[in-house]
Amino acid sequence: MARRPERKVPKANAMITAPQPEAVSAGAEVLRSGGTAVDAAIACAMTQGVVDPLMCGIGGFGMLHVYDPATQTGKVYEGFGGCPLESRPDMWKDIALGVTTDGFGFIVKDFINEAGAQSVTAPGLLRMLSKAHADHGKLSWSELFDPAISWAKDGWLMRPHVHTVFNQNERKYGRMNYGDKLGLTPDGRRIYLDEDGSYKSLGSTIRNPDLAATLEVLAREGAESFYTGSIASHIIEDVRSQGGILTAADLEQIAVEITRPLSFGYRGWRVDAPSPPGGGILVGQILRIAEQFDLASLGHNSTEYIRVLAEAMKIALRDKEQFIGDPKYSDNPVDRLLSDEYVRTCAQAIRSGEKANIERAKLAESRHTTHVSVVDARGMIATMTHTLGNPSGFIVKDTGFMLNGAMSTFDPMPGNPNSIVPGRRRYSSMAPSIIYDGNEPVLTLGAPGASWIGPAVAQVILNVLEWGMDIQEAISAPRMVSTSNAIDISNRIPMPVQKGLEQLGYEVRRSHLSYAFAAVHGITRFDGELRGGADPQRDGYAEGV
Image (cartoon, rainbow, N blue to C red; front, top):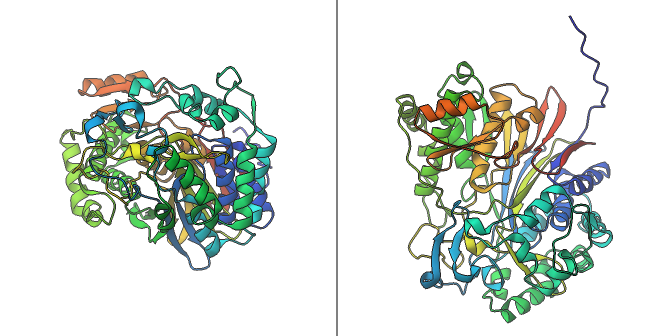
């Protein structure tokens, strides 16, 4: 029998994974300096906003799931703002044009709900991170900004995924091209475009001294400078001068919600994920329905395995759209949706060959988001998904940062579950999750990708817990999603599997991408050994410290 070479890579005491190498490096340095997982996640997030400017930034919002080993408890920080207080349910009723063809946003004439000053909602990210740092930080707030400031001053290289996004054709879906958004403001053209107006090429160095200066103010004065101080005044002045409706009251009133995670079981493990308005319910329903099947007997990514998961995904998405929303406005019957009786009924329908009907995801979200997962040497976990919702292209004058365009995710037609209402928070599919064996956390993961997040996170959890895969193998394995009556598959799903699904009457859409559908990043700790994984579809990696 052939010998396996001895593994000589030193075991890590801490681990971080994210889609941007610069951000991973920033967080890893914080871990080396003795910072907590929350410290590292903040340093990583600040750097992500510099080096992935269409995905995230201080003008956005997010969700942070923290496990504290001192108390052996987890909690979720929600950093969501809402529709501006001056918004009206019918403000765009007469110029609403429908839903984007891929379901990721609503279309309004001249793109005013997704680009420019009117598209902005109140950004809650910084206030959320400030609260989490007060609760779980060890290093000073200011030093967590040092790496991001350096990258903004000294410059970062245009990476493949960023270049793809800059050049991506979004018009075919009914959205403004993201590259065009970069040119909406004079500052955007100066920072991100060449002198002839063309997009930066691969390997180009991008510097943003204005953003470096803004981050220096935040490091020195704290997050409240963004909400009630000098930066807040600058935001409101510029937004209002360009026809936006965001007010000082919108920034002042942002409240960080701290909630207990939604908790459910899967074959003896405990899965904790965000409760509504977060996306844990989607992950939960998929896993609970899948648990009713002998998946191992079906074969990984076989025709029947994919059929079962596709139907579970459709049921979960259908129920989410019918029942789940902002807890302030919705009852959210999560206990019933995760109950043994209900998931068994769903499983029986799948066994009998029933096909759930969901023409397309209706609660629109942007896929343009990012993620970071961290485990520190003490066992604290911080797993966070954050986003601009939809990049607005509106860079606040002389600050270097872009505000979110999340108004595009609210229905411009009144009277619907996700219609515009002053102060209403958007539903989010964000699902930064932690899985436990008893009271011991063994897996943490999350992903960007809107309504693809739940299906992708659930599949990676299954790959680890059901199939025994290493975390990198679990993330890299071909995935599928079903957020409509069609089944979308990775280009690495074998053709006979596709033909088998088509023979069952399914429309199957093969992606041209080998690595598709959300970008999962995660960390496992089994038998005391940390392992990290990063999705190959993005540019990042996992680093042990």
